[in-house]
Each structure stands twice: as C-alpha cells, then as structure tokens.
Image (cartoon, rainbow, N blue to C red; front, side, top):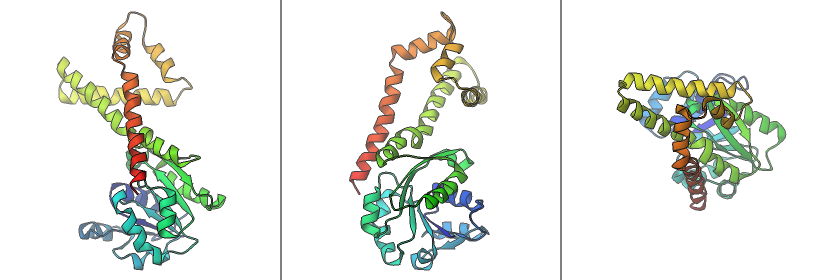
Length: 268
C-alpha cells in the first residue's frame, strides 16, 4: 500500500511522519508532494519519504491520497488530480468545511474520508474525528483508522455535521485551553510570580488536572465538587465564573467555530 500526502505543512507533515511508523506501510511507501522549493529541500533530506513536486509523478501510484492543503486550494487541486485518479483510490481530506459531496463532484472519486484533526497530533496526542462515504468498505475503514491513529486517537462519527461540530470542540479546542492558560498566567504575574514560575504553576496544574480526569470515572462537575469546599477559595473562584456566565461564553465560542466550519462548507 502506498500513501500520498499532498501538502507538507504542519498537519500534512505530522501525518506523514506518523503514518511512516505504521506497520501497514513499508519504508518509502509514503510519498509527499509540495510545491515549495524550501519544503521540497527539507523533504529530500528525510530518508523515510519520497518527495514530489508534480502530481503526475505520484497521484497514479497512490492507494490513499491524503489532502492537507488550505481549503481555498481545494477546487484547483481536485480539478488537477481528476485526470490522474483511479476509481479504487481513497481520498482522506483534512480541509475544514470541504464536503464529501464537493470532493466527489470535482474528482469523480467515490471513496472519500473527511477528517478533522487537532494540533496535539504533532506530539502523538491528537484527536481526529472522521466520517466516511458509503463506498468505503469495512476493511478500508479499518485501514484509514489505523493510519489516523498514528498521531493519537481517532473517532468515527456518523455524519458530516459532526465533523463541523468537532471543529468547534476538538479541532479549535486546544486554542481555548491556551486562552485559559494565558489568562491564568497573566493573573499569576499580577499576583507577583515570575514569568517562569507562572508558566510552571499553570502548565503543571493543567496537566495534573487532565491526568486526574483521565484516570477516573468522575465527571468534571464531580471533580469540581471535590476541590471546592463551601465557603472556600475554590468555591469563590467558581462562583465568580458562574456570576460572569463563563460556561455559556465558552459554549458560544465553540458554536462560533462550528458555525464558521459550516459557512466554509457553503463556500466550496
């Protein structure tokens, strides 16, 4: 089996690196295409990829074509690969908002996977949600899942609306965490901690809290109740968040990302 990754940006290269370690693929069965001369020079220094700059040289050879370019490049790219593709090939797209129907229409291919990864994939801690077109077989789905799992975990969802929704939760979610961390670090600085102390205080608090959650069956609410005693410091902080409607504001932010993903789909 050969996999072609089109687009060697952060996410494309992350998946190429991850998939190169898959037991499903032998060495040099990952092809990576990019038009940037600088990027091609970088790729040529990696011995586990074959680098390409022309679609004609690699698209016909691929069993799976992984699309990792910006959504506004979608139409031109799909028109360019249409004369080169074969019916049995599978396309995996991680382009936000680009629908399965639009990919089918432009490429003429039927076997389409639409996926939404997130940034922690770069360290093998990613979450990729994906949906498949009906033409993708059960065996092919297992292969796709195995490849996506090389960068963390993947979950198959039942429809494309949930891909747009996962954009608002997991896709954009790391930025929400960083936003909250930044605010806490700024508060720590204002309290008199140094920059280094503020960073350690916040990062270790986040990683510890997540690990506690992952190692238990308790809900976030249950953990909050464990930490917050009546009349105590934590309760004062949580009451302040409730008074300022923080929970609803976070939900609104997630839906803003979700709605934007839907809008992007209508633009293609």
